[in-house]
Length: 297
Figure (cartoon, rainbow, N blue to C red):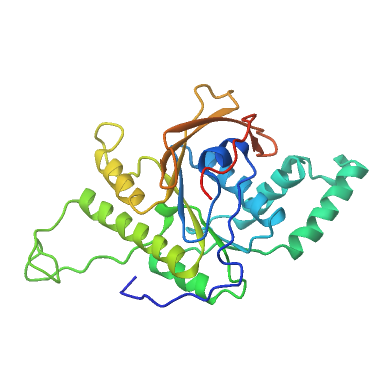
């Protein structure tokens, strides 16, 4: 973050807290609050994104939380919007051919379109996004977001390290041995983690960051699975997180159940498993857990 500690503009409701709308998670975590960094991780990036979209849907349309979604790496914002629409309306995206829609479905989509236009939600899908540009986007947004979703951490860009031409085995700015690829990647992810936590703290914002559970260090990695360097990078990223939710992939391709594990919870019990069900056509996630109410006040 280049030592930038400038306070972000806070809104009158910047201390607001909101639930996810899912009993199991709300019962385990209580609520997501301002100044918190929430990490959602999975070996299947798709299911992590699905969980995040369900949370965004509830926050934006039920709680009217101003929200910014960042999709680095040139991700398709149209796909995000179609997934959000399916999640919100219960109408599968593949059924949107006008001739196949019923009168009620057309009316539902019309109402959703009106609500989406008025919703406090902005989506950015930059082809290239450096990690230290994230707080700048949030700071300059007229929306003044109270919730920021980053999907996903591994798609952020980093400046190439400069090397001293006179000594290729030394850092350009110091006299320490050149670190391994694993060490450099862990350092990068730890820096991102600190930056996102600082963004949450200085702006009174809730930040949700998506990441792969075993962050691959190099494209040419041929060693045992999982990549030890990737695990080190993953652990480095989690250090500043207040809450970490890990979503397990299904045991069978046809299984619609997903286990969400509360790996870390700064505000209450962790290692709390929640079994959820995913509707493959609408991307809705739900569970039958009876809520016990917030674990923190």
